[in-house]
Structures are given as C-alpha cells and as structure tokens.
Amino acid sequence: MKYLTQQSLHDLAAAAVSAQTTLAQIGLQNHMRTTDEKETVVRQKMADRLQVMRASVEEGCRQGNLSDSGLSGGDALRYDKKTGDQGGLCGQLQTKMIRNALAVAEQNAKMGRIVAAPTAGSSGVLPAVLFAIAEERGYSDDQLIEALFTAAAVGQVIAFRASLSGAEGGCQAECGSAAGMAAAALVELTGGSPQQAIHACALAIKSLLGLVCDPVAGLVEVPCVKRNAFSAVQALTAADMALADIKSFIPPDEVLDAMKSVGLMMHPDLKETAAGGLAATPTGKAAAQGCISRLT
Image (cartoon, rainbow, N blue to C red):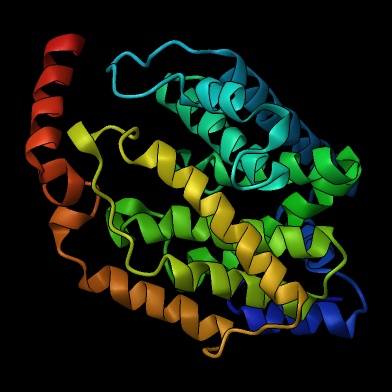
C-alpha cells in the first residue's frame, strides 16, 4: 500500500486507521519506500539512535562539570540529588522527565553525543519522556523504538507544513516541534489511537506557539537547556489530555500552519540571532561578554 503521508497529520492518522495500524508503522513503511532500505536495516538504525539517547541521559545525569562557556552544566545532577526517590513537587514521572531533559541538553552544550530530535537545541525532550515513562512502566526497547517511529512520522509533517529551525521559526519550531513529536509518541506508546496522537501533537505545539529563540551569547545553553525540561512536561500534559479524548479545537494541521505563520511574523531579533529577548537583557549581554573572554 502506498502511504507517503508526510504532508498532513490528518492524512497520516487516516492512513493508520484505514490500515488498522499505528502512526509508527505508517512512518516506518514510508521510510522504507523512500529509501529502499529493508525493515531490519531501518529498525537497527533507530535502535542505534535509541542507545545514543540513553547514553546521553546517563552521562548527563552523572556529570556536574560546566560547559566551556560556563553558562550551563550540573543542573541535571543537582536536580536528581535534590528530588531523589520522592519525586519533588512534580511527582516521580515528571521529575524523571525534567532530570532527563536537563541531562541531554547539558550534554549537547558540552559537545557530548546526542540525537537531534528534531534539533540539537531540543534534543532533550524526546529522550526525556521516553526513558522516564519506560522506567516507570517497564516498556521495552522495542516499544521505545516504535515510539521513535511515531515521533519521526509526526516530525516529517511538522517539517513540511511549518519548520524545525529556530532561525526560521523561533523556538516554537524546535522545542515546540519536539514537544509535539514526544506527545504523539507517548500516546501511541501507552496504547492511544492515531487520532489521539495527532491531537496530542497539536495540544503540545499550541501551548508553545510563539516561543522565541533568544540564546544568550548565541549559544544553545541559556535558556535552551531549561526549556527542554519545560517542553517535556508540556508533552506529557498534552498526551495525558489526548488520552482522555480531549481534542485540539483547532485541527492539528491548522495548528502547524499557524506555527509557520507565527514564525514568519517573528522579528529577526527573536530567531536565533541573540539580538532580542533574554539575550538582550543586561545580564544576557554581560554573560555574552564573559563567554567571549572565557572562550578566547
């Protein structure tokens, strides 16, 4: 059967329902058709990416050293020690997601190996939610790989209809897209339907619509590391709502179209130029000068 539904979340879900399968399987079949790769090869590649994600979480949770710029580092370890087994105010699942997101984003800032899912600046979101819920509920690696295929299928549509680039669409295009992908993945991983998955994606992106990209000193550290943690929690919230059959009033594809429109309307100072937002505050400017001195 010919799927190739990378242009519409509605069509992607409809194809899955028609074939009585999942978004993950539609995404997998689409990839195989466009690359001529065998299923075993594609699955192994995704398994390899899962292992890189796991290593980035584990390494990030162990390391307390700062990045070369001095702007980030150690927060994942600090948060993990503080919350411990009690789970902090957020409860154990959310606490693990926050820890994981900080860990991976800090690894990225320290030039560690990560999976850009969909970008380096938003790389903490997807592994944060997947490994946290797997730890809580005992999901296998094979199940997590399926969830990654779900995220990939949804991410392809986001890339087509909107953008994954902070320089083009602001941080809504990076952390927003990552949250939407993670929300859809969570829904299918926990037994939700394709329709619930695309509405979870829409709910997550709506909550981050208009988020600017304003990196202090032009580095993917402040506020990017902590935004990964907040975006992971947004994904969890969206997935939980969608699993309760709460839908986005604005259809998912229209949400993506709105994200593209908002990105186009954003001032260039708010799109990865470090010329506006938090980067333009007195503290942000002073930090940028300090980074220049530290790195030269």
